[in-house]
Amino acid sequence: QVQLVESGGGSVLTGESLTLSCAASEDIVANYNMAWFRQAPGKRREGVASITIGDLATYADSVKGRFTISRAKSTLSRQMNSLEPEDTAMYYCAADRRHIGPLYRLLGTSYGYWGQGTQVTVSS
Picture (cartoon, rainbow, N blue to C red):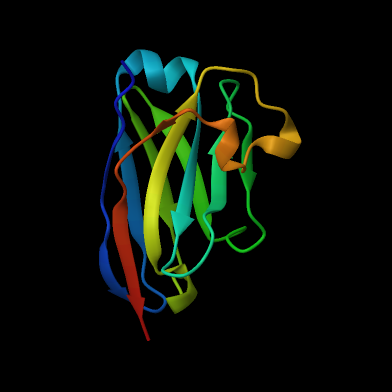
């Protein structure tokens, strides 16, 4: 059974930083493709960062240079710097063991396992 548990969300001011974590078993973190998605109220779900089993990272244009995805042992992390009000959303961790081609790594349909989400609120 794949269980993903996000943590680290909170309320911050514009320009501040947060680190989100997704806890899973070491087998999952080491052997699954993983990603972070977000969904703001009234908006579609958006893939923001992914990392393959081979540690290839992909970022959405909206977060390039500000967000960094990484994994270690039983945790997937994402460092978010220079946060903006537009980053306010519920953030979800996702995972899947299947091969995911480069064009599909930020698509929600590529991932079969999801966490419950953690809220990030950025105020100006």
